[in-house]
Each structure stands twice: as C-alpha cells, then as structure tokens.
Length: 265
Ligand code: NAD
Image (cartoon, rainbow, N blue to C red; front, side, top):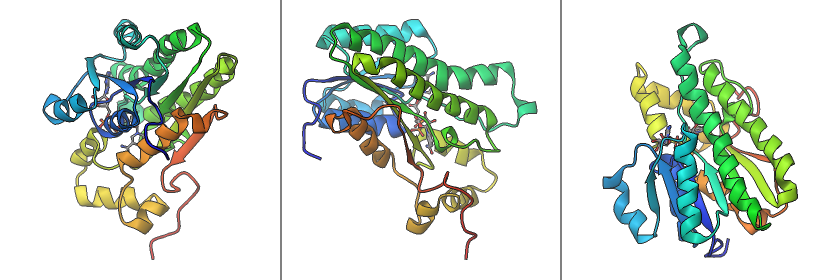
C-alpha cells in the first residue's frame, strides 16, 4: 500500500478510544484522513498525545443515542466540508445464556452493536450522498456475524444482523457511490472487550488457550489476532483500491468460522 492513501478525506470512527477502533483511527490518520473518534469512554491519558500529533479529534458520544451520533457527523462535516468514511466499530460483548438475559441486557447489546450502526449509516450517508461523491462505510462485525456461537447468543444475533445491515445498505446506496462493507474479526487480543471477558473467566490462561485453539491460524502462530491486523483490512475497504467492493464481509478470524477445527495433536 502506498502512503497517504486518504489525504483530504474525513473519517468518523466510533468506539475509537481503544482496541480495533483505536488502531483504525491511528492508521486512517497516518494515511492522511482527518479522523473524528466517537466514544463514550475516551482514554485521554493513553490517547491524547498520539491522537493530537495526528490531528485526531476525540468526541464524547454514546452511540446508542441518535442525537449524539448526529452531532458528531455535524461537527466532522462542518470542519471538513463532508464525511467520506464511517467505521461503525463501537461494540460490547454479551456472554449470557438466554434465561439470564434481561431486557436491559438485550437493549444494551442490540442498541450498541446494531442500532448505533444503523443510525451512524443514516447520518453518514446523508453527507456522503449530498454532493454525489459518495463514501465508504465499514461495519466491525465479528466471526459471530458469520456463524452464531453457543456462548453468546445475543451478541451473535447483533452481529449477524449487522452483517445483514451491511448487505442491505450496500444494495440500497451503490447508486449514490456509497460502499458498505464489514470486517468479521476474532479473536483479537489486547482490547478492552476481550480483556474484560478474560478477567471474568475462572482460569484466564486457559481461556486464552481456548480462544487461540478455536482459530486454526491463531493456533498455528500461537497468538491472537492484533487490532492493527484488523485496521489494515478496514483501510483496504475504505480506500480507492476497493472502489468496486460493496456488501462484502471480510473474515479475519484465522479460519475460526470455516468449520470444526482439527483436534489438538
Ligand atoms: P474495545 O472494548 O477495546 O473497543 C470498543 C470501544 O467501543 C471502546 O472504546 C468502548 O468505550 C466503545 N463503546 C462501547 N459502547 C459504546 C457506546 N455506547 N458509545 C460509544 N462508545 C462505545 O473492544 P474491541 O475488541 O476493540 O471491539 C471493537 C469492535 O470489534 C466491537 O464491535 C466488537 O464487537 C468487535 N469484535 C471484537 C473482537 C475481539 O476479539 N476483540 C472480535 C470480533 C469483533
């Protein structure tokens, strides 16, 4: 990839304070984009210096609120004239069986992982379509957005629906030169979401081993996927290299969703 692929473009990255969103915000900014992050839990101590050097603007925003999301797009469009890129990345896990899921649990997971992506698209597409130039949306789905998983049914439902949203809006807005794609990662190490799941495990080391064992390539390399490896796929999808790519789900899960992995030797 050449440097400065995104010079002159404006990007909004939700959930950009940590993990995959942070790596994506940094990479898009390094490629010349003016980046706005939208996160309800910004990590100023960790991010302010590096984000400042790259001109990344951090907006406090709960993506479950349409009005808060709309305000981020208005600020981004006011400063740069338009919005070219949206990465719907904010998300939460929900490791619970159905009898333990409350209405509040359901709303938290579905509103963060699905509703916010829909309203993010609504407001981004408004700006992308206005001048006929179009734009690119990437939804951060999951391997659970390819095949459901037994341990987190509500999360799986949210991500399967996000994959459906990706294809549906890609179909609706190709006429506007707007491309809508998704990445389907996992297991990605070092993020707040995965760390909290590991902290909740009875045996943290065993939980890490199990995550790695479920993904054939992660097992072969002896490690989880990195946030930066996901960000590279997002960069491809928002760049002109993918100008004819829409409605695609790029799976970056080390083969986890291909089928039943071989038994450990
Ligand atoms: P993370 O927790 O480090 O990042 C998620 C970010 O979203 C956090 O900064 C958090 O503050 C923010 N966020 C959550 N709810 C929000 C809300 N209501 N409003 C605004 N911001 C909110 O975890 P991550 O692993 O980097 O997750 C990023 C995305 O990747 C999520 O959509 C997740 O489902 C997806 N994903 C992660 C993995 C993995 O293994 N880590 C696997 C598959 C998919």
